[in-house]
Amino acid sequence: MDKKFYIAANWKMNASLSFINDYFSFLDSKAENSNEMIICPPDIYLQSLIKTAPSFIKTGAQNISSHDAGAYTGECSGEMLADNSVQYVIIGHSERRQYHQESNEDIKLKLLKAIDSNISPILCVGESREERESDQTFDVINKQIRSVLDNDILSKDIGLLIAYEPIWAIGTGLTATPEMANDVHSFIHSIVSEMISNSIPILYGGSMKESNAKDLLEMEHIHGGLIGGASLDASEFLNIYNIAEEIRNG
Ligand code: PEP
Image 1 (cartoon, protein in one colour):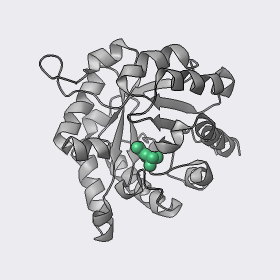
Image 2: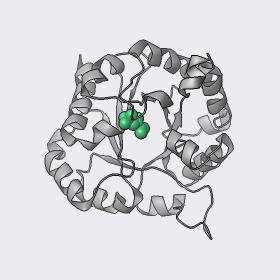
Image 3: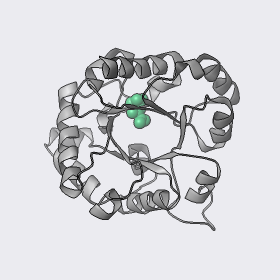
């Protein structure tokens, strides 16, 4: 199957200088395969990661300001991220939506700033447990996608990735079954296909780990993973990246 996989780590608010040194003593340039590995550390460690990680690894931030500059304490602009060689940025993660009250409108502004700065967005969407249990999954996803993406944005060559992350599966140990995830990925694919002909890679996120990665990544519409907890273990994260390669070569 020739499907390129994107295996992305969201370290959230974890790591330290010694963690980074140990991580990349283990995960060195010999680990490279034909898929894309992306690591998103806290901003303060972006430079350490760039200096320490092998060059095949792409670097991502976990957030971007919706403003260009000025009195926005604690924020980092797209220009600043680009100045630090950041290639990807996670936008609309459920933890940002929940703890920072980011709306679909804020997320669109952030996505536009990423595009202005030539940084590829990783747009996260996903439903809560209540929404799934009341059969609103597809409505929620539809709204999250359509209020942020449009034909104009999608026609730009920006390296956009979409991550489907059911909120009830993030950091909980619960994973969507491969079929459940694939159904939503297929739905996202159909929305995006109405807007452009190129297909956009859709990653799954929510307790992906070595033990479930193969079953998830083998599904037709799953093109990778956005991985939180399991990405903090260099060996487990590398194993997931290698599983993607086995599937690609298989
Ligand atoms: C995430 O934070 O994007 C995530 C998917 O976390 P976890 O893998 O820990 O569920």
